[in-house]
Length: 498
Picture 1 (cartoon, one colour):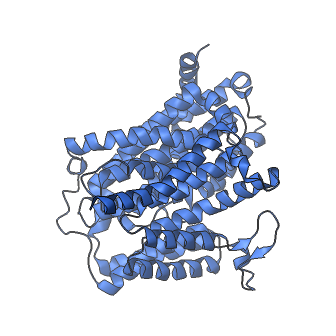
Picture 2 (picture 1 turned 30 degrees about the vertical axis):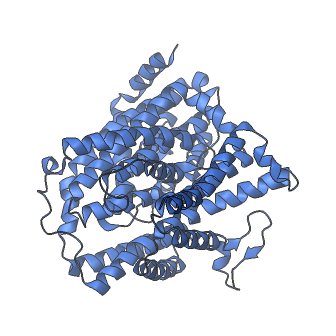
Picture 3 (picture 1 turned 90 degrees about the horizontal axis):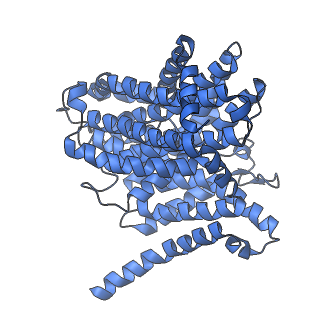
């Protein structure tokens, strides 16, 4: 029986009143959870996992899968409207989404572009998962510590594509992000680093409060100090029709969404990468293409690339989970725990021994994708009203959201203090012309890079030639060195030509 027949079989499993209902509930909860700073897909799935104990395994995984997938949509809402990413993949969306919604006064178009790109990128990912998911999972297994190290080096080097005309500032901020991510316990030796005698710092700097402060609370400080309303008063009509981008803009959304959906799916298959890296790499790759507006100032291609990438990665992460029993992210690990709890053994035999489970989940992603798009577009007029709230009410409201989001991510006032300190740091960085994006990305990628780098060197007894020991790592290392040399060569060429 080919994949088409199995997909139709999965649709028959999903298209029952109970399963359709839980798919819709999961999609709505995912949008809400994604839009709330400090929760994210990992906490959302973990919190709702106990609610599925009374469900049968098929219904339970359909609900959790829809929640995880639609969470990628919801993260963009607070990123675009409040400059507070609901989850780490939405960091890249905020780079262009917030300026488009505020400085250019087009929040409706920004939200529409995010929803449409999420749908397109997610559809690409689900289609790839349907037809070549098991094969992609096997390809993902070829990415061991060496290959992942090379890929992460390429990712960190490509941060230079986000820096504009001042790479020195970008390098300084990237190194600061790596330094901050190194605080805490050494994962391999268990010894503390840079904790300065504080028991709190032994656990490292928590990411969610850090990013809420660096992006969201820093914007609140900026508004409070400048007393400048960044939102134009002449926002377009608060209707769905008034939020639809122009035909030219729709044509600008589709290519980056398709490219990012494909790239994000490939990244989502890789062990430990997740939607954050899918969003980041897709945005960095998109910057190689020209846009009507400079990236970071409200270009619609930047929103499309980020949202297409993280939704493609969310779909791609199901391939290793179902076909090999290997979670690609923290959320995947929670879902794997649910599978085991329900008495199922993920792996190649899952598709033959429990086809109603595996194909029911895949089919439910199609339904969740369509339903989430409909709901996401329907709520745009209500979401835009947030930007009409006067600053005298907006500032304390967003401040409260920052505090609640930071506290709820760990249940500790330590997280709130981290948010406040990082907010001041983020404000000072912006004031002196330092973008926080490279710092946040380096903060996310450094633990993965360090773990894979040290594992590779342990395997080779310290021999760096291991990074050229396979075709995949060799190609990635060549790209890495090319990205290092290219900016200097480009600067020399411009100087020589002048």
